[in-house]
Length: 297
Image 1: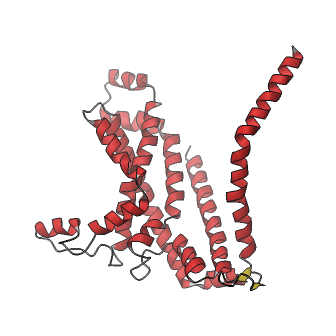
Image 2: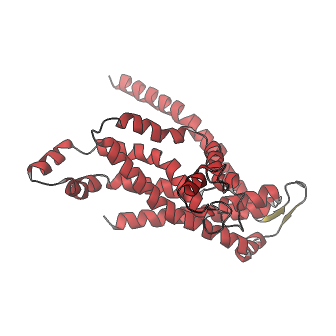
Image 3: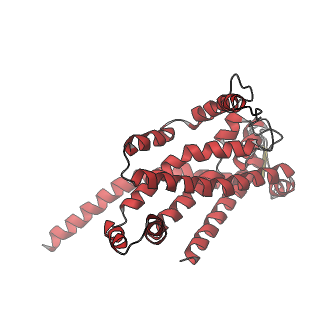
């Protein structure tokens, strides 16, 4: 009996290793090793077009990075995008989830349609919205609608004051579908008996939202905010496709800055130092967000 239990335990360990092993190997190969090499190359002067010409320069790349006004400008753009898009996208996703969770006719079709952007490449969506934002009313659908209403056309992507906000609007629309599905799962986990008891006590819909739904979604809200913040910090595709970081660097983010320095300018070592600092910023913001949400409990 003891022997059979030992054999069973051993077979379970082998099965667990077989399932976890490949993921663990991929994690090391595509996450841990690149991180180590990023930190390693960050202390070298390394031109990507001259791989044999590599010189150890200690922390010179970091000193240059912190003195570079373009880096701080990209950091401010990234921070602005994150601060605005996270609450907007999360609130929109929650509102959509509440709408879909209601027993309204046609919500299944609505849920499918609003989740559809998640199944489409961000490059394709960025190209479509670039056309929608076109300042020419004969080409841009949004400006065509504005001019038909007697309003002036807006240079959504060519004006530094509106370019980032236009990307924020598009990003919130595209990403809310994924968070909506997470909120729907959270809503389904709330016992229906809570709502029934509230109805017996005479609570209205708003009171149910404040005292039952939102407290029941506390963990879900924390998770959605965390993943949305991390995704927002990694903003790259939309500025790259829609504005190329312009106009006047108004949409140049930290990831776009790293890409420019590493693959356009060829300063691979300098780009690695920027990537290392970016990693520290994301981890720090994640820890601060976790601490804030935990403290509120």
